Amino acid sequence: MAEVEKVPDHCPGTQSENAGKESACAGCPNQSICSSGVSKLPDPGIELVKESLSSVKYKLLVLSGKGGVGKSTITSLLSRALAAENPDRNVAVLDIDICGPSQPRILGALDEQVHQSASGWSPVFIEDNLSLMSIGFLLGSSTDAVIWRGPKKNGMIKQFLSEVDWGSLDYLLLDTPPGTSDEHLSAVTYLRGAGITGAIIVTTPQEVALLDVRKEIDFCKKVNIPILGIVENMSNFVCPKCKTCTEIFPAQTGGARKMADDLNLEFLGSLPLDPLLARCCDEGKNFYIEMRDSPTLLSLTSLRQKCQVTLMTENGKAIIVINIEVLSKERNIHDHDSYSR
Image 1 (spheres, helix red, strand yellow):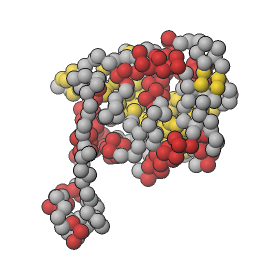
Image 2: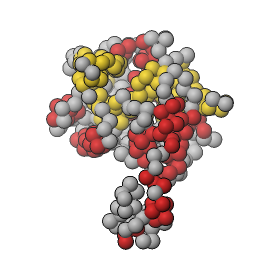
Image 3: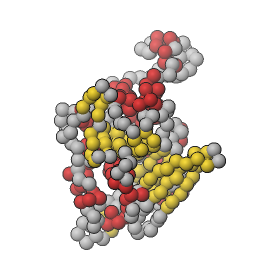
Image 4: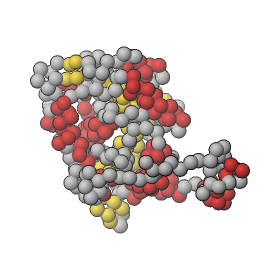
């Protein structure tokens, strides 16, 4: 097991006036850097990202503190829905799960490669108005492990945000790994200048998932990311033969709906656990086209308005309007809510 780099006890922090000057800093390998004041200077990458993403209208993070809840699936469904609604709308997905990139497989671009030009990396186009960038395109094999420490992950995410030739985009969706660590901090830091429209939180009904998702919500609050709402994935199981729905993960503590109510957040709806959807993800096929008769598609209701975010200005304040019809058929929810941030 790799040795964990120990942070000195009582470290004043890199932004402190006493950085590198406290007795606790003695022996730290970064003491000279901190005391020089270099660590207090703004990261030039923030301005580079701001300039690179100046033509991107909305930037959405898909988050969850828990792994395996379906962030990548939700990201792919949302991106396909937004692109399919309007052929003149440009949508892109950035897969910043550095160690476990899933989007190349889910969106059917597993064997594609990115090309570099004078204007930067060119993303892979899934449809005429839907593009994707992922570290999966830079690996020699889909089974290659990415064994990187935080700084290298940080540099890769900065490159994705500042050196990819996205062009003019209406939506950029960032598919993130579980947790609240390197990739999340890097994305939030570099998007600070460009602005983050908001985050969609994904969870499953059981308390073991909700516990970690609450930590993700706390992370969003601490770094000032607006939370657009919560999606409950795998709320029930849809039999691919008889189409009967069965509760596989009982929401013994009320599930995502109760958590949203408790935390005063929008509950965006529920999606079932559907083997047909899983098969489409494994095969990189478009679920909306391949499985037109699936109950999951019915529960999406209107995929054109799955989660369309529109910014307006009212009384000098930014209003986020969410047209949501990604709601459970069984629960028959149809939200069209607006709330200020």
